[in-house]
Image (tube, rainbow, N blue to C red; front, side):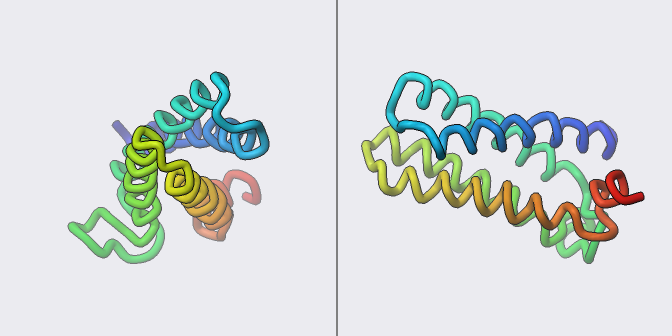
Length: 129
């Protein structure tokens, strides 16, 4: 898969994950719709993490295997927090589940998302020429 195709997969998964995640944070917890959309959020976040891990770093140094850069840390954070969130909710640990989900939402969507708008990034180029 080309870099551009992976970028489209990333956008196609992160945008609905952002919308679903926002809805879930603002809505009542533990309902059937929360569980259903929570599963969708988890799958979307896992897909976006895998897609970004397959994309070579294009900004900044490639610090590992001439492929991975500092931005790939967000992908690892997503993989760890999503699996931890799933494991903790299955065990009934709502507090730990909440912490992991908030970590993935704010860390990987908001912080990484805002960094995507910095000069030299694809989104910056698309929006600001």
